[in-house]
Amino acid sequence: MYYLLSFLIASLFIGCQPTSTQTDGHKLNVLVTTTLIADLVTHIGQDRIEVKALMGPDVDPHLYKPSALYLNKIKKADIIFFHGLHLEGRMTDLFDQWQAQGQAAYAITQDIPRDKLLYSAESSTQADPHVWFDPQLWSICLDTVATILSAKDPQQADFYQANKETMRIAYHHLDAWMKQQAQRLPQQKRILITSHDAFNYFGRAYDFQVIGVQGISTVTQAGLADITQTIDFIKQQKIPSIFVETSVSESVIKRIAEDSGCRIGGHLYSDALAALGTIEHTPSAEGYDVGTYTGMMQYNMSTIVHALSNSYIDI
Ligand SMILES: [Zn+2]
Image: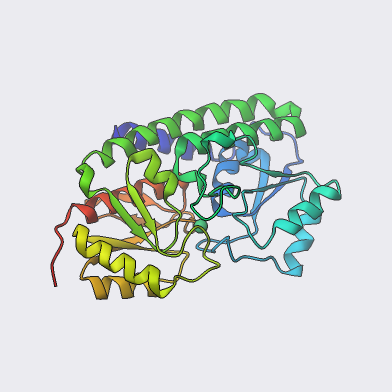
């Protein structure tokens, strides 16, 4: 399965190269908020669109607010894709404003059926936005983007739809590979502790119990009670490793690791990709491009499976 996936991803990469058959000079200017959306939209539009992301690699979308300089780029965009579900918590008013002004701004999560979303214990109305951690849900966003691009640029509709289909198959293979990797861990070892609650969809898709010390958003800090509770839980359950996230401060996780005696199992990519072409090696010596969605997912899963396979060292 790994080789098939590598082949598919390699084929996709080749598919991203500019083609010599392109004759139309005008490319759609597409502005996106996050690196994850940039990855998805670029795979569908390839060389027929110009994609610009407001947030760079490793930027936390919960805290991001664009500067006045970036707001100028928004006026030039033919289409804006944002994530929605309050992921970009400090930009929500801006999205409403753009839509009210008639700007073509869309939430890529708009077509995910509400009953497939997860809700936190604190709120039954505010859905957890981290849907990309379930490739089946991220596939629904492919449909949304392909439909919107096709409506805006009907001459290229077949191209966008064909690319969407290729990506749908790639995500399906990714999902199967992720399931296979998760099953290498016995059920009782599938407990994932990270800085903030980004991994609930991952937990549902791959059968992990997930604990995010900070809750759904990074806006609120972890309280002392959360930290103490997590330390006790690690000791009771003899959890060997917990994880830091690249877009979130690691101080709380470091403190919990020191006080509970467990290891830091590695850094996971949660809410942002790295720069395209950043290769991360896992302990099993596989290298993944964590600047891509599929590479990030594989790197995270390999890191988690390896670190949770270890034994707990009692202090
Ligand atoms: Zn998050």
